[in-house]
Length: 146
Image 1 (cartoon, helix red, strand yellow):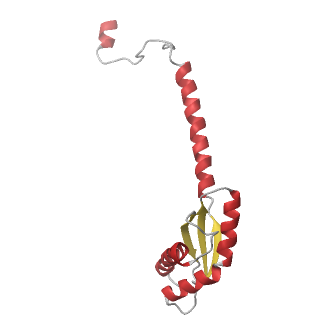
Image 2: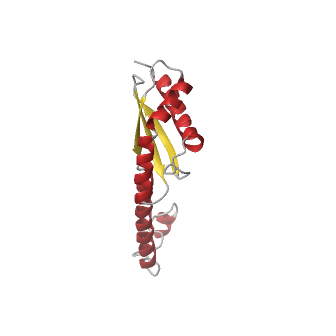
C-alpha cells in the first residue's frame, strides 16, 4: 500500500500528462479543445486512476468526447507509463465531472434567493416599526422616568 503523498503525486502527474497528450498528441477530432481534465484520483495501491473531465458543449459533444476518450485510453495510458516510470501503470477510467451541472444548480438556487430577498425588500419598503424605533432602554432613562 502506497502512502497518500505518493498517490497524490501520481494523480497530479496523470492529470498533467493526460491533459498535455489530449492537447498535443491525440489527433481525434472528437477530443478538440472543448475537453478539460478537472481532477484525477488514484487508489491506494496505485493500480487504478479515475480521471474526471468536463466538456464544453451540448449533449452530443459530451457523448462524442466520452467515446473519443475511451478509444484513446491505450495511448493515454502508455504516455502515463512513460512519464511515471513506475513498475505498474495504473488503468485509466474516465468519468464526466458533474461540476458544471452542480454549478448551474447553485446558480439557480442563488437566483431564487435573490428574487426572494427582492420581494422581502419590496414588502418592507413602506413598513414602520410596531413600537418605537429603538425599544431598548439606555442608561440614564430610568432616572428620568421616575
